[in-house]
Every structure is written in C-alpha cells, then in structure tokens.
Length: 341
Image (cartoon, rainbow, N blue to C red; front, side, top):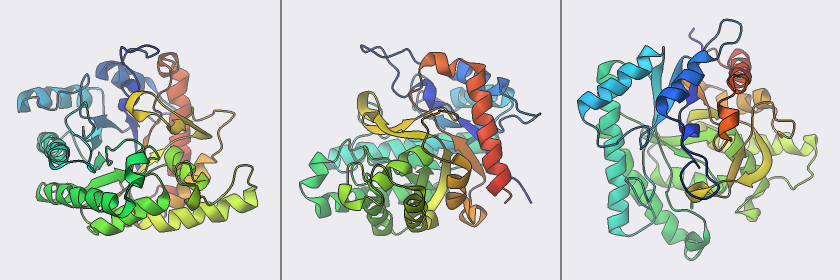
C-alpha cells in the first residue's frame, strides 16, 4: 500500500505574472522550490513538484546538460518531479489546436519538446511519476461556436496526433478541463473531445477542483449547467456526482484547489476558474469531500500523486509561509481520506 505523493505546482510563480500593467513579476523556480521546501505539517513535507516547461523557469530548448542541472536543483531541495506542462499556447512554443495547419504544427512541436524534456528527467532519475498536461490553446469559445462540430473535430484530430507522439515516448497526456479553452469549456464538450480522441491509454483528463467546479455552474456553456447560482447542498452533490461520474474514468491527473465561484485571470488565462487559498472564507468547495469523487479508484488509472494548483495568487500570498502550510494541511487531509492506493 503506497500513499499518494503530495506535490506542489511551480507555475503559480509564473501564470498571470509579467511586466505588463497591473502584473506582478514572476517568482523564480528556485524561490518557488524554497517556499515549498519550507512547508511542514506534523513532520510531513511535500514529496515533489509539478513543473511548467517554459521561461523564465525553463527554456524548452535547453540542452540535456542544462536540463540535468535543473533536475539536480529540484532533487537537491528534496523533491521528485511529477507532471509536466507542455508549452502549447501562442506566445510560448505552441499555438491553437483548433487553428491552421501551421498553428497545429506548432502545438505538436510543443508536445514533442515536452516529451524530450520528460525523457531527460526520467533517465536522470528525477522524474518518478506524472503526465504531460495540455489544453486546446484556443482561448475563448466565440470562434469555436461558429462551427462547433468542425472545430471540435479539429481539436480531436490535433489531440490524436499529440497522443501518438506521447505514446511513442512512453508518456501520457492529460487535457486540463478549464472553461477558458475552446472545446474544453464545459464538462459535456470536454467529454466529446476525450471520446473523440478515444485513446485513453495515451490521452486522459486532468481534473482541477477550481476549474471543474465552474463546469457545474455552466460558465461559458449555460446549456450544460448542472446547478444554478444559489443552489442548495441537496442540489449540489448529485450534480457534482453526475459530472465526476462522466469525467472520472478519463481522469489521470488531479489538482487540489479551492474556488469561490468567480472567474478570474490575467493575460491569456483570463476568465478562468479563480483559484483561492485553501482556507478562503468564500471558498465554495469542501475540498476533502469533492476530492473523493475524483480519486475513487485512482490507482486503477495510474494516479500516484496529487498536486496543489493555486494560480494568480498575489506575490505577497505566495511569499507567505502560512499559505503553503495551510495548503499542505489540505493536501494531507485529502490523502488521508482518499489517498491510500
């Protein structure tokens, strides 16, 4: 019996950060590692980190030797590497999976780069578990709505090619359900994509508690709402079960998170599920209970770790040690309740 490993995400130091007006500067990889390493609850610490493969944390074109140095840095702080985030978005390496042949080519190139980096980390011994995360990289649903069947078909076709690349490298892709990405913006549309690809051994779903909560409310897809604002507890749990029953068989990566029912964001990640601190008084989720719906039979789907995701926290929150201890406590509660594989 091995317990689920507890990972912290490095990308909250990057996502929504930058040098544009109203943005705060990114937090370096080393600083994020140090903040994570300092967290401790009753002798328990984080086991590993999940990692975003783009600047300023990583140059996706880094040499093998440079990547091994990064692996040494991460292991030196006491961490394994878990799931990796492929740089699939416009402005990184990739481009829209729903776009032109050239754009889709860039998307696939980003997946190839992620697989190459994964191989270096795997062979180095630093990466012990996890998947490679993608999404459609097509921001917003307006263009998708112009021809939903054809556009979903294009995303499916790109994802199939990406899944083949991953399978050839011995990797699995996880498509993150997030309301700001076309074709993945509702639980039903996400299911259409997963079933359309139909390669569960190579492409599955990444469930994030904050993002999937908005699936139940039907943000960006009112026709797929399972509850309405002002719902009761009696209405919520059956609705939540309906969504998780549909997506759980595909779920191969899981993010612990909190959400206050709002959309939030910055830059290309705008109007997405608002991540809140684990103990946010406005948080709508019973984190431990919600996690149980996703983690049922987790071991059968190859899930060996869970990861915290808290994007777009102010830097002052990220720099506060209490933030990470509170998160770690929430993660331990989830693991203790549902995480004995």
